[in-house]
Length: 355
Image (cartoon, rainbow, N blue to C red; front, side, top):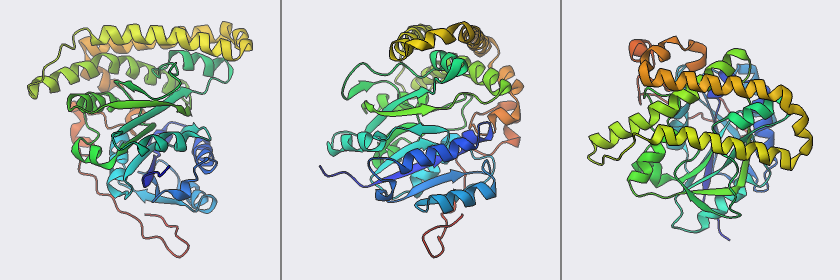
């Protein structure tokens, strides 16, 4: 089976509020792939100042197939992704995050799907690392859906930017949006892709584990913003559809999404206990954490309905530093949308270098 040429883009924006050790875990999981990352046209590590210089030097020493691209401070999550896609040369662009662990067959499972020329977008399955009561609670309540029941490729209306691959032509026609008044933009992008006639496929064999929120503040604001996005993203989709003359009824989408989260949470809880029955012993500790997360999501959803900008203005800067979320009252202090200047490094002898 002939695979298309590919490039791997890993961003570090989440590491501003996450454990830096997660970056080593991510790269170690990529190094252990059944399809070696050295087969990529390039493996680009996109950084806008979230990783200390000494850590980047360690990365380049330990993983000589990585190239670091430095972008201006304030460059957000989606902008780092798109800057990497623009600099990459592969036919297929594979996106990963610097705080995820990718199972050994992840990369191969994504790319073999593209042996079919009609396949343009393939997302994998991401779940929170459910180790311990805290991890179990976050895994159940997090917005990642339960792993697909289908044994093979299936169609979906969503994807996650930490685990997805696109043919270059798709991103050239419909780039990942940024600088909108929401926390994450993949929902907006997925809606735009579907409206343009693209099909999003999901590959259940391409599995990744995502780190839990790191610390009390990160936990609180992450779940508030998940609830906020659950209300605001459908509103933005409806507004953009109306402006393009392709209006669709999105009024019930937020309620549908909340119901979807509840159903998926139940599926994930059953799946976790079925996979490892001893996890039932962690439930007494996990349940209060789950209740707190659900309450925070409800706070975010209500704020998204009645006072979206007031909520965004209340979010600490260190939480949104890695986001391309647009806060209108602070727009003047944020990086301008879509104006990021990226500089591809010229590697010194040995093929390694810092931008």
